[in-house]
Structure formats: structure tokens, C-alpha cells
Length: 131
Image 1 (tube, rainbow, N blue to C red):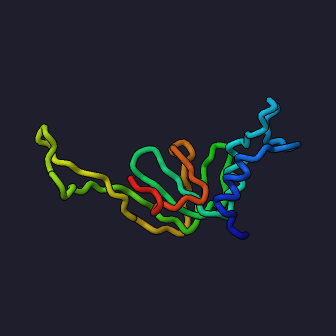
Image 2 (spheres, rainbow, N blue to C red; image 1 turned 180 degrees about the vertical axis):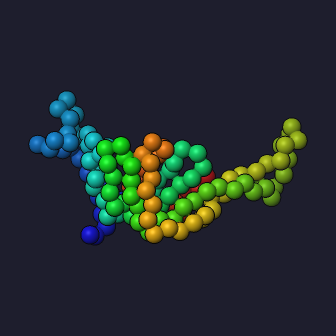
Image 3 (tube, rainbow, N blue to C red; image 1 turned 90 degrees about the vertical axis):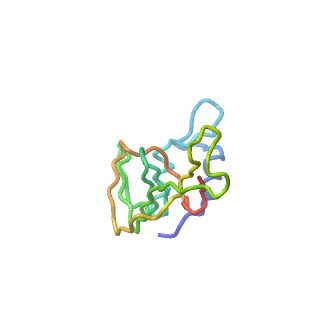
């Protein structure tokens, strides 16, 4: 299955849905339901931010009504704190630190619990997000 470009997904979200079960009947017409958007991402890379401090990037193989997800070719990311080189202390004497995303693990397949998912980014690449 070929990858769907991110801009095509964004265009689909922004275009009115005519005669489609995923559209709203309020006359605005610019609505796509969340599960329909996730369904369009099957076979494509998706970036998943979990509650807590874990993030995953992988190819979405499937999901259920609870948004439990199966991802293949997975990269797991976590965070570590690092000192800032400039002015290492704040005015109250605390050290200045920032979080840095680090690759923790590579997995063939993972099942993520939808109950712990905070945000999904279709086509998202964690290297494009800076914290």
C-alpha cells in the first residue's frame, strides 16, 4: 500500500465532504470524524504521543474502536534532561535544563493501548518537532 502524503490528508480534512457519512449535516461541511482520519492513515507512518514521557513513530497496521493501535517498524522515543551551556543558573539559583528527545528502542511491532494515547500526528516525523 502506497503512502498518503501528509498534505493530501490535510487537504481532505479541510475540504467539504459531500454525500459522505463522515460529513456533518450542519451546513458547514468541513468535518471529518477522528476515526475516519485514523482509518486513512493505515499503511502510513504515524507519530503517537503517549500520556507520560513516551512517543512512538511507526507504520499503522490497524486500530479498534478504543483506538488501541498496532504499529510496525517502530521507533520509541523518551526524554532526557541536559544542561544549557549559557548561564547555567536562573536568578533563584536553580540549574537551567532542557529536555532532549532520544531514541530508546526500535521494535518490529507494538500494540499501544488507546487509553494511554494523548495525541496522534498522521505522517508525523519526530525529527521535525523540537521541544
